[in-house]
Length: 551
Image (cartoon, rainbow, N blue to C red; front, side):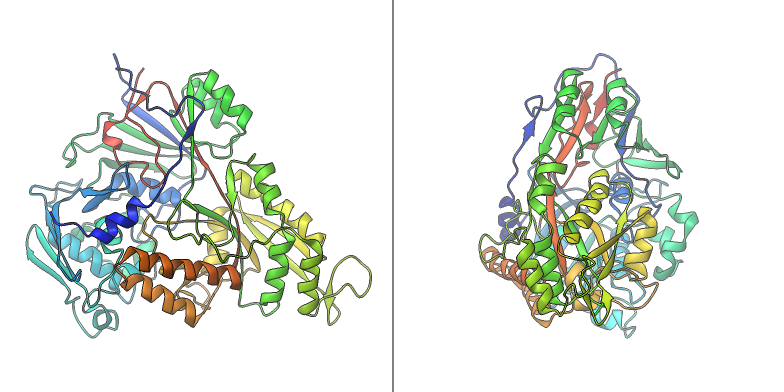
């Protein structure tokens, strides 16, 4: 099996640092008698988009990661290894990838999985009707443009050679191809082929009973409460050792108690206080901390003329981000100066402006924008109008909710009146991402191990049409950014890609479509009765078929 060197080099460059209240070791005790169920706590309910091509929340992705499988997968070392595909080959010029599937693969409904399903999945992303965030994964494939414009019946660069072999030809090299295409969840063509792609999100019957080929089969979904899954006997990696898997929605205020009393086995406790982590350890619950791939940020709506670069710069200087890290997350994280994370090789090591909290500097930039407090009421104004901005905050993340009032208090010091608007997460997605009816918002953005920021920053990913989800949420439109993103996709040399992405990071640092806040360390907690589970930044479920829980 021939592997692309650049991908391995780029992945190998990802570094991880582990800290644990119980030594950071995987539990390895033998189980005399095991439970038939694993309960994994999540902090917010899935929306129900149980289709990996259209899911837009991490909570739906939890389900999809268990129900669907991909041709390749990332292991604990963030290395690619065979999954549904038993092997792959990359041409010398890196423009052709051939995947060979394992024989005898089936979906959860017993239907055979073949190369036709792979072709269908990729062509669905290339469809002109597709409006999700993943189309950039396939836009370098030969024939994409003709298919996307409705001038061709199929993507010419996706060729099914036989039932187990699919050949993908690119019009130009696409550096993240193996990760982005190889780890994409494969859809069953026989289930989705008769539904127009632009109606998938409304296909409630299919979404409520997803059929994949992953380690667990979907059983039921009680909105706002839990998702129940059952082990798939014909899983290519072997039948999971635990018969049932429950994704349970648990309030952050009660998750520690549930871990202690055993109603939850594993949980994300990233908001946990250091003292509480020690208490959990004393009760036999391991807490592991490690760097996050998620950027927490405050985004601007660049469609709003008031939010010019001077105002955005003033706001960046006007938020005490280090105080947020020190106070809210007790130092368990890092302040960010661009929408990347330092644990990835793409983060610029120099050339960034560090927006240290500075009230006077913030006021100077507001003055450049024409804002001053002319009537002495404590708030700046221009043309007789105070600068009042609404900050939309999705509920469900305790730390994020607590960040809002801090930003409000900080910006009041520079004369900006911030109105807080807490909203249900799904309602926030519709208002901010779908309808573009916002001024400021708080959100998190999870990054891939091999960075391709195209879905979030390319000019064409922004839309002003109400009801059309645009993943360039801020509507940042920059020719320079587009050129750098195009270059990153084409470059095969890791050093060249690193230089390009670092230039891109510096550009975002200067233009400030977002104010990056911080990357909080991930904290996962699991009971001592859990074996086989090793938390990981990018691939939490990579070996889920081996997880067990002692009674």
